[in-house]
Amino acid sequence: MEKAISLKEERIRKITQLYYSQPKILDELFKFSKDREVVPRYFDEFGKRPDSPQYKDDIFQLIKKGATSFHCSQELWYEPLKLSTELNEKQLNELRKGWDLLIDIDSKYIDYSKIYAEIIVKFLKFHGIKNLGVKFSGSKGFHIIIPWKSFPKEVNKIKTAEMFPEWPRIICKYIMEQTKEKLIEKISSLSTPSQYIKDYKASEQVVPDIILVSPRHLFRMPYSLHEKTALASIVIDSEKISDFQLKDAEPMSVKIKEFIPDAKEAEASELLIQALDWHKHNNPEEQKESKVKEFQNKPLKLSSLSEINFPPAIQKILKGLSDGRKRALFILINFFRSIGLEKQELEKRIDDWNKKNEVPLKEGYIKTQIIWSYRNKLVPPPNYDKDYYKGIGIIPTQEELNYKNPVNYTIKKIIQNKAKNKDNFKNNR
Image 1 (cartoon, rainbow, N blue to C red):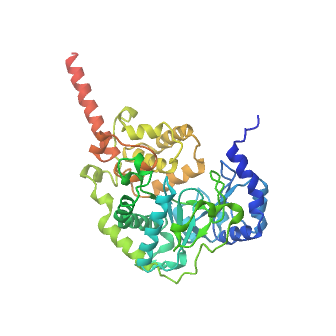
Image 2: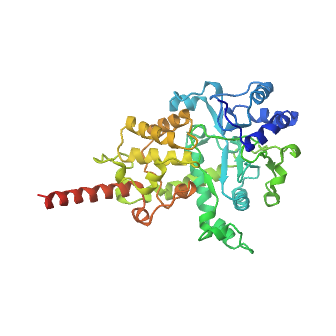
Image 3: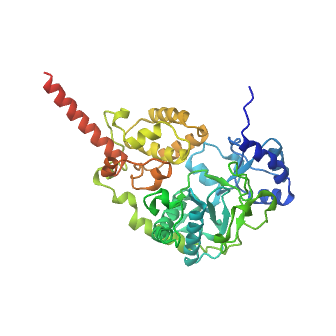
């Protein structure tokens, strides 16, 4: 039986070939694809990985096969087609040519995304970065890019190209921390309070977020269409973000601009070094409770791993999600590792969870994230006060907030249940 096509899908498919057949659009897609992994999306599912067009016609052939959008890596590779989930860290480092810093602003509301994008652009320019690119995500956010050319190729004899995704994550966390107060102040002091705030208790609950990068992370290519909105991911002037209107991204009226600027060599050195210095002195992982610190480098071995002892937030995630699946995967992997789940059992639980998601994540993506996690130092899942939970629609209970972290909660529940069972045994003797 053929799958019924929704009105949304019908709309995007009607304009796809007409839009992408424009020579200027094909030119931009192909030009931006150089040294990148490029993956087509066929409305609700991605094409095979790895892939990277060798000729402009390769892109057009994918369009003829039904591709509705194109997504690419922020990592730059010597030979993208040699990428594989089977490669170890050393092999990936040998293939990686470098990486662009991609700041992915995520929000429920385009107005707030504009505010955050403007704040970040000013922050970056304060740090001496004059050449950066800004584009509309195609939905409700923006992408800001600092090209690989802008970064020093070594810092303290460490090759920058090999520090992906660690250093991009540190930079993004640094930016979030340094701009947080300004963002909340700006949203809170709107002369005419936005209708969006009325639905929430405080402006802090609707602030945009930056999505942290992961290995082989993909983002929507400039001038690619967006399946949900049928709008184009257009490049905009960094000085005119507030002027942007959704109508500017109507596919057939797009005006071409360069997303990657002609940056100066190492102009982002100050930003990188200050971010690394900030991380060294303000690493949130070093400020966790002593109980959490005990298992940062060594997983706990808990004897009772029944879901009854899992925090409500984790239990809600395990029921499956429609949005925020990648963030949820990050939370689950770190939670399961931290409570001492064996790798085989962890993979089984993740697989069971993924089947419950409205749209399951690709098996290859999950496998890559698990492999990457086991190559790195064990860290606990994010604390409840982090944006990870709010960002996927999970609101921790007050009891959970009291314990700060899902692992602390689980430890306490196991101890309480053991004590309770012991008392019941004594009373029933």
